[in-house]
Length: 364
Figure (cartoon, rainbow, N blue to C red):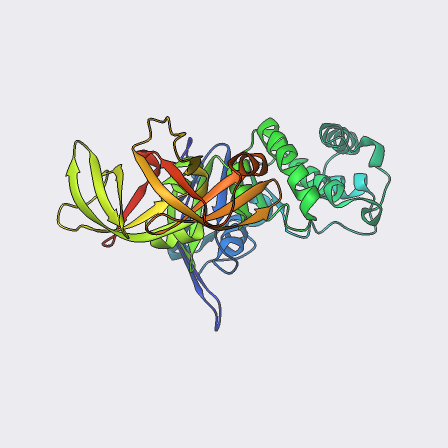
């Protein structure tokens, strides 16, 4: 994690509901994504960090400041934590204008300071022309920016965003991903962002904490966690398209030869225990390169003869199902699919580099 500033170890039990158990949670500069399926505990963690939920045990610490420690009955209320919080529904006051919403949390400040800060936030988020509008007169993207402006106008030391794009339609959500990333980088405030969308996590996050069944099961940089999941649960949560059991046949010079179905693959042997040879083989669809037979010129160690079984269109992309001696999925652009003249039953070659074949031991 980058310059860790927040650490947490706590437990929250809801009556008749699941237990949320957070161990060694940490967040630093940049954007830390809380990632996982609905119901995995992401929002409960966010609300506990904000002070809106009180855990049953444990502690939450910001630098040298103790925000919560159960055994000493320490609890710092939300306003004293200086946290900016943007809920999923934005929670704008319908009777207040944009300027009124943004300035609401500054009512205790002198009028001149309040006006200057509101103007600064509106200018930063390009909301000046909308200052007198009411929330129902705004688009979803504009409402999001107002909620963000309201959260940052108090100059928080930590920003918490709960599914900030979930309320938007798909075209708007795709358009605003890049804008939100730009704004967060410009703001330069440590941010924790909740999402269950893999593409949002990849686009917005620097670090990621993966949640499963109320527990944080892996954390690290976004590229590392998504390319090298720690266990089968994380591989499934992060939507690795190809997960298949295999057997390590040999290890030499840091490379493992693995039998998968009727095929053999070469993978990095990093982290494999010496006494077990059963593994899960994980391959992301975007790491599979398809080529016609006879057109292969590549340094990739794995050249697999494959048969096209079918494909589905996902906007500009094609998700292609292959038989490689085991089920394999590739992700292509529409133009690449046309160049390959994809058709069911076609024989091709799949290229996969050894570092992109990730092995998870059955024991992990």
